[in-house]
Image 1 (spheres, rainbow, N blue to C red):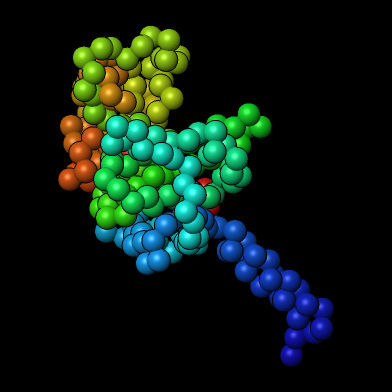
Image 2: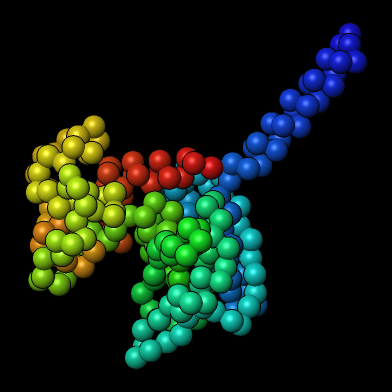
Length: 228
Ligand SMILES: [Zn+2]
């Protein structure tokens, strides 16, 4: 038989473990305009599938989205977005009617809080949704170019670092990737610039939605997801 004190101790341990488990989650706040709940799923994309049980989804119906359309393109209203609370384990997902390419990122507020956000259209694919989540959760940068200009020197940090963990301005042998990559020659292009910025693998979801995430992006995404 357990003594009264032992029972109380066990109850406290159980209670604390329930609370701790409860905190270990990512909260997806999904805002939508339609009556039908949007289909938001990460289970078909690796490594998001491993974290499905750590994601709690909350739906909110609204007609007020922090964005507008300009020349057929979505334009995010950052002033409106700054009004929401920047809770670290929360991602704001806006499912907007219309045709546009998704957007995702992290918005720094004056008080130091970070708002993680994703804008996707109603019929967007799981691959596109996960690509945008990578921007919002792990701060990954796009691995495609497009602009023939070089990545600006004033955006470079010390020792090859950029603000994006999956991009470097070194052409080879970036020290932060040595334990993750088995290649020493990188591929040119990133965050819309063709030159002066490099990614580690030829193919990646951050470059092409038909591809899986490369090992570098997987590493940094899992590191971020495992915070909660
Ligand atoms: Zn990648």
